Amino acid sequence: MEKAAKRRFARKLLIAVLFVGVFVSILLFYSAASNAQITIHIPPYTNRNSTVVRIDVNTSFDALYARGPTDREWVDITNSRELVITQNGIVTARAVLGTWTSSAGNVSYIEVDALRFVEPFDRVRPTLTVTNVSGNDILITARDDMSGIRNIFINDRIYSAQDFESANSDNTMVTLRYRHNGRDELIIIAEDYAGNLSREFVISGSSQNVSNQQSRPGQDYEI
Image (cartoon, rainbow, N blue to C red):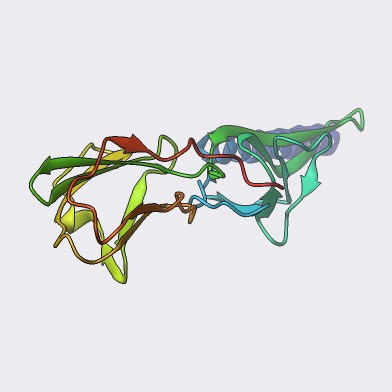
């Protein structure tokens, strides 16, 4: 009887240890899952047909999937961690951190999701306004409501942020003051951060004054 009681006690103890071990494993697993974080990086502005979104996870995972604005199904990016998109919109990512099988044989997936609106595509030209201030002094105003103004070209010279007379916080509107010698022809072009160029604004060498004019509104590039 005493030996049988000891065996029963040993079995109960073993079951209890196994139960505690499983419980601790589950607790640690879900704790790691709760701290998991997916980062969807916003790519630089571009006027190209496509760009790549980088997606990172701060912990180990079994699989990583993502879906772009035009994707109907999940795309497996486990190895590359990169998703190709062709238009602005919401990017969704899902990391499968592991699986758990219950005593009944049911498999559960431990997943973490994230989404972010990304807007890297800018396919619209900037616009230019050139105003005569006084004498041969002209004021160039460049505007781009998407990626912002990066450069203003006057003939073979490049003027950028440090040269602008004024600019708002995101460079969507900048001004540049320039003195025209009244003899040389000026060709003025604005460039935005996506690489789009405005239409040329030309001041002939014989002009003594510049009338208030504005280049035609930007048009979308064909995709």
